[in-house]
Length: 410
Ligand code: ATP
Ligand code: MG
Image (tube, rainbow, N blue to C red; front, side, top):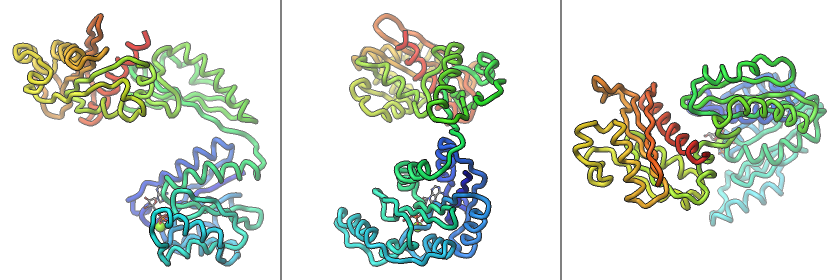
């Protein structure tokens, strides 16, 4: 079973919108064992869209379009699909009722334009959209399928997940499942991770392992092809166990798990306070992305200037003068005082030089100190990060969260 994805929208061609729908759908189709051979992007133009769908159906079993299902005149998808499948547009009352309900819930009268969205190719299967007005559609033509989905990802994704995938799983003869799992690490460079798991990178057969480096993070992706989902999971788990033995604590999570999420889980009932300088609140921002963190995160202080380090965090002016703000001593004092002044179990601090300016003879751009204090001890780690200002900030937040994670693992 082969599928193609057609992104519809002049704004994608112009580069104003990134075609994330194609990436999302491809990942999901791979998971369902459906091969994707082409991604096409076409503007809001009837003739060119017609040609694109025709071409797709000539070489694949399924053409999935996204976009152009809205109520305005430039939304042409329905008309073109009707022409391609040779089934004329007809009013579907059920869709009209749903669109009316959508507006009722918001206390708005349905604009006349939206009636257009209820005219769909005859015989189409209708896929409910619980977020917006444009329903998704499946149109069968000559034993092939055109699947039309709305453009906005937050509308398209639930329809794909809840309606399209189950439909495909019922209708296709599945040859194989392709499944991937990503193990996420931080703290080592790509080459160091490579050396630890080199043996697995040369696997031949149905299961393969690859390394993907991002700033502050190295992912290990295990991919397998199997006859069933159960078998695919089994293949992956077998290799995952072996890789985890090599990497130990380096792995902070899998797939959609985040470093901040891992930290939040490990904190349990412990409280923390954070004193951030060079990360400018990034660590706090990332931790507050985790729902329920209010029971752990007591307070954060962004003490960016030396004055605020003295006034708010009570760092002695002598220490600042003598060692400089980007120093082991200041990082230690910031972490201890964040913990004591803000009365938490753990204090975390960052101070350093994010660049591109600010370097001095002895202190290069990218020099960052991370402090951690609990009632027993204070530790400070020194890092020399590379990259642009935003990357250095991110790497520093990554290192701080990981320092906390490793501390909590003990
Ligand atoms: P609407 O009812 O919102 O008009 P639509 O189905 O007509 O929905 P479009 O008008 O084509 O969709 O696109 C609406 C918005 O959805 C775009 O402005 C863009 O933000 C987003 N979008 C469209 N296509 C894609 C895509 N391929 N990838 C990511 N986002 C997209
Ligand atoms: Mg639109």
